[in-house]
Image (cartoon, rainbow, N blue to C red):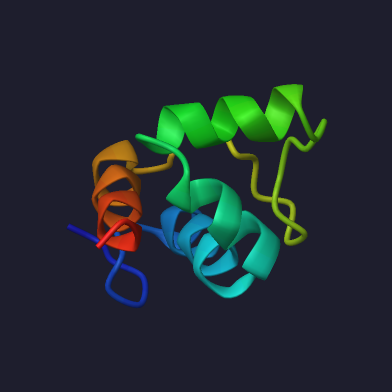
Length: 76
């Protein structure tokens, strides 16, 4: 299994990095039950489809399980 800074791949790491280090994204993520909900809010309410590093919020390589776990930790 390939990993990138402790995450499954670059895409998952990049998305988690943005969520964890941008106050606005962090705030949105804390109010979400899972990554799917976060992704929908980004698309529907903010018309955002990707991080500023151009990784799509719905990139097929994202490890949703890791992102869901990260988001669950935000609530604690």
